[in-house]
Image (tube, rainbow, N blue to C red):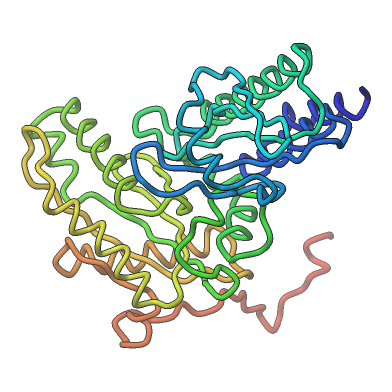
Amino acid sequence: MLSLLRNIESISSCRDRGKLPSALLGAVDALFGGGAQVGIFSRDPLGDAPLRLTTGTTAAHVPGSFWGEWLNNVQRDGSLAVSQCSGLHCGALVLDWSELSSEELILFFTTEQPLCDERSGSVEALARIFGNQIRLLDYSELDSLTRLLNRKTFEETFDRLLSSSLGKPSDDATRERRACDEEDCPAWLCVIDIDHFKRINDSFGHLFGDEVLLRMGELMRKTFRGGDRLFRFGGEEFVVILNAPDENLAATGFDRFRSSVESHEFPQVGQVTCSIGFTAVSTQDVPTDVVGRADEALYYAKENGRNRVCSYERLLADGAIAKPEPASAKIADDFDIDALFG
């Protein structure tokens, strides 16, 4: 019981949404006294993609065809469904998951012991605690208009986001859905700014300006991958952190979004464009430095035609911008430090 209570506490106190699935699995495992195989599947409810095991034990001891067929009938109301396969008692339920992802997470377990009502109810209760914590994180970390991550979240969790983006070990369910091997994939950060946004507000009013911001958020979710981190920094400025093997592929991803904005028909406003500046992220970076570099590339894009994507590193190599000189304070030869304390 003490082990279970500690695991419940780990769910309700977790501020890292990437670690929450593992905290839930630990609690369910403690509930069964270590006598069950527990894991989490991920799937796209709108597509035909197969189930993916994202967290926890393997499901190899139960045929994959069983999971694929049976889970299609599991209700999405938080109730536990049970069945039997290969002499094992199987349980599964659909978890409440973040607004940041369009995929479903499905908790599953197998055990040799029959399930009693009390234990089934406890599994459902643990899933509700998990869902409550996800909603609390969404409430505190998402921008109220666009439902992207907010600036406060970026500033408070940059180190964690950077570690995940650079491919260090993580329990984040999205990590296994990325398109490249993260250990060899550097991170890139871009700043996106809507062109002539003030003109939109002045010409059409703030309601239509807000609609443009909403549509931008939707386009970002559709264009970028599930594991990419999407932020609204405030006003008409957005930030994306993604992984790509090299600068060209990163630029291709950012330009795909720029093109999707340009071709989108915004209500009443019509065509809207955006400018993008991006930079590579290193383990030595701090938030102000990396955003500052991307901002400088964005400023160049704005000053040179708008509706374009510019790389800070490429601009630097081409001599289009100058590398900032290290800040240093020159001390006068006749400076008397004792005078400061005289």
